[in-house]
Amino acid sequence: MSLVLGSATLWQRELVRFFRQPSRIAGALGTPLVFWLLLGSGIGRSFSLPTSGGDMYYMEYFFPGVVVMIVLFTSIFSTISIIEDRREGFLQAVLVAPTPRAAIVLGKMAGSTSLALIHGMALLILAPWVAGASPASIPRIAAVVAVIAFGLTGLGYQIAWRMESTQGFHAIMNLFLIPMWMLSGAVFPPGGAPDWLQWVIQLNPLTYGVSALRWSIYGTPDYLATGGASPGLALIVISVFAGAMFIAGLAVTRSRST
Amino acid sequence: MPAVEVSRVRHAYGGRTALDDVSFQVEPGEIFALLGPNGGGKTTLFRILSTLMPPDAGSVRVFDADVRTEAAQVRRSIGVVFQNPSLDGKLTARENLLHQGRLYGMRGAALRSRIDEMMAQMAIAGRAADRVETLSGGLQRRVELAKGLLHGPRLLILDEPSAGLDPGARLDLRRYLTRLRDERRVTVLWTTHLIDEAEDADRVLILDRGRVVAMGSPNALREEIGGDVIALATADAPGLGGQIRERFGIEPMILDGSVRIEKEDGHRFVAALIEAFPGRIDSVTLAKPTLEDVFIDRTGHRLWEDR
Image (tube, rainbow over all chains, first blue to last red; front, side, top):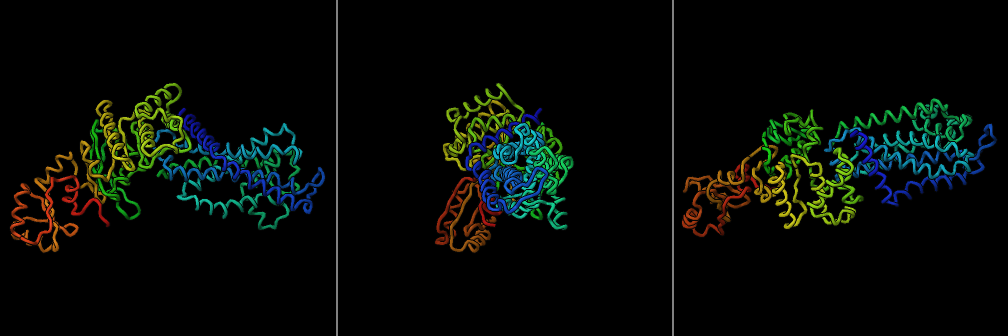
């Protein structure tokens, strides 16, 4: 009971805080949207992929990749608040409260996941026009985005929990997370990459997130023509990843409390 | 059953010892101050008592629950007031208290009426709907205090409670804590580096370099020094100190270039000193001992000193 109450109240706090800082909304949505419009239009028709349903232009190929980028940005950036909470003292009070440690992890991860979902869905509303997705597929898409976001949030949680400063967090972000996004099939088809890169792509959990998202948008495994993981495998991997990140988050929370 | 029982606690950060064999007890209903210079170990002790981290060795029990193995039970019985307010500035005062209450398992109408009660007690009800970041430091401290007391703890632990408060607000805080103890039997423990803040406590524990150097009621500690404290300003403190030792058979202390003597009937001794060393003494101060004198007596240095 205290697990539900504790995590629900921390989750609510994350959302309230977010909506009271409008600049955060603009930051999380703006960058990927600009990326998509500029890169998508620029590359435009010089890139097309043969699929069973006819040629696919880059704007459409890149669309799920941009959604994943938004989710990645929002999930990871919203876990920066852990560093701020620690510095500003809020976290100390949470840690001396008798609420279960799992409630602290769950509340933070659920809060960040919700924000990522809100942002991701803001763009995914366009899916029926950009990628021909049926409106009926929206709940399925949302579920997949939520699982991806939960896993990424957990990853951000572990990085942020150990960090003393937000600058350090940004360094890790650039060094580690941007390549992770680039090598996930979000930007270019994994099928055409050289062998050594194929290995990296296959070990990258985000590859499975992008594949699962493509499947949820189209409802078919046609996207496999450009590489990636099969829908079943993709769904299993993102779920296991999300669960593992929660457990790891719990472990790191129990190990360090000051 | 003591409210707090600290027994042979040691703690180190890397190679640096923060607490070295610290033992003491706090009785229920006591107001207890941990006095010491920054770096003396009181923050470490505060963290251990508030369950933020376990000690390396030794045992700490709060109302008979071990902070290491029964942390959840300890957490329910303590209220913690941090030096840096633990408030969320983006939330209103009321929202801060709502989240706090839920983290302690409170909810619904019971929680709301408890929040109203605490806000009224702290005289912040009129600002309940204001975001905390718009409140003054003094008001924030009151919200912080309301936060720490919301769940009705039996022991209130405060870290440097009057830091950043103006003298009026300090006085209010001390009065409130005394009332809390008198009316609700709440045990109060605070850390401080301010002498006068420690003077207000029932008992004081003085920590220096991780060790307990003195413990007792402020009066008892002062009486241990006995008599008065005389400080002599002079051009040659070591020389004068040596001559005083030879002539009067007492052991003066040389501190910051002045000679310091603890002596009963100080006023008579001052007259004797001035007659004995004409022209050598630039100025004399004669004072009743304070807790700082206790600290100097036990450690040979001031509370505030570069080390």
